[in-house]
Length: 165
Image (cartoon, rainbow, N blue to C red; front, top):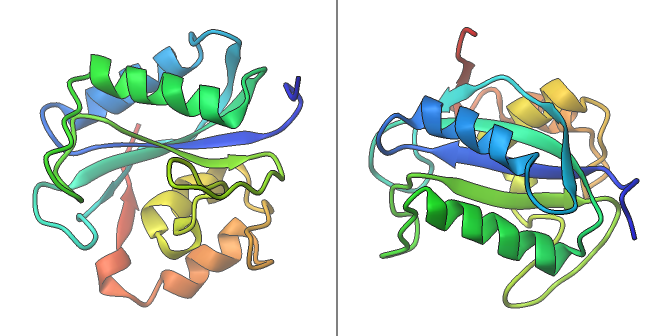
């Protein structure tokens, strides 16, 4: 059991009442079997990256879980489905999107799951809420979440704003 590992999950939505969906998902993440919610970032707004559609609402949750990464991912996908997630094509708008970003220091690669998330360090909508929760968390390239976020600040496509509580 690896319940002591810091696990980070990206939470996002851009269909329906996206902010309400993200807030509800954060609560439900802590109610999953063998899992507890340690902390949740505030909500952030961002334009879709490499896609069309309405703005996203994003957050990051820190979890502790007795689940192995593949089992945790299966529960995340089940939660997405309860929120009506469809996958008609890559980068389609979403009622809920849950990404397993980090599962402690584990490194896993495969067709169904890659941990750490291979593009987390390139996405301000992940880094802004992650830096709020864990600014000194080290990414795979050695930078902290806060350092990686600062490096994206000049890119207008990466603009991410905190939504007031």
